[in-house]
Amino acid sequence: MGKKKILFVSQEITPYLPDTYMSNVGLNLPKNSIELGNETRVFLPKFGVIKEKTNNLHEVIRLSGMNLILDDFDHQLIIKVASIQSARMQIYFIDNDEYFPRKIMFHDEDGNFLENNEERMIFYCKGVIETVKKLGWAPEFIHCQGWFSSLVPMYIKKIYNEDPLFKDTKVIYNVFDTEFEGSLDSGIINKLLFENKLDVSDLKMLKNPSFENLSKFAISFSDAVIQGSKNINSKVLQYMKESNLPFMKFPGEEDYEDQYNNFFDSLVEEEELELTEE
Image (cartoon, rainbow, N blue to C red; front, side, top):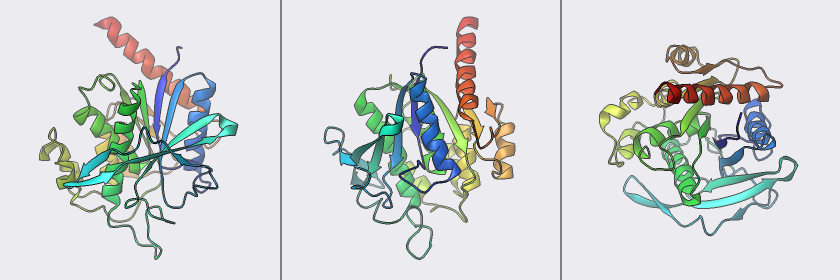
């Protein structure tokens, strides 16, 4: 199978964030992709808990400085990078002083779910795509890890679908057991409607932006889906299985890299078959 161009849009990667199954997958999948010779780009939010000096993060001036408009306000997009030498892997971090303040991820110091998590998610997802555009790099696959990346499939299929860099890109959405309680702010619909290519009917699944509905929303715009954890939301799992999309079941907690790579290969083979039939 030929070399691929894979973009990993991650929610957690160790060692930058706590050591969990999800953060280990966030490290090992792109590491394996690089070892296989694939062109690989990796993105992560620059959550405030990530220590810049300890991890040798530095700003990339040529990629930073763009303003993203969100809810009629400009928000500066700051791009930082760091390297994991043992994996020969470079990580791009999406940063903004307002959205990624010190010492928090999704909850404040008192354990409360942040009221602006929906804005932070919009900023991250759009920031990744705009940065990839600035790099002039056309990924064949985008692997979205976790709910914080759940808007990427919609952006690729509805907003950037005519962009030459993304018109042939396949989006894979990977659901993990990182379910949050309650819902994001329902104002997410109005904030997304600032995109001229969207209308209310595109966003009806986000009237109640719970983890379940965010996941279903992402799946509805994806080309393939993965059960990333053994025990994920049962309604989301059922929706995945009934979606008629290529589906990869939970591969286990060890030695899963080959199963992921085989799944990517199967998507390439499926695409080649479709082209032959045309």
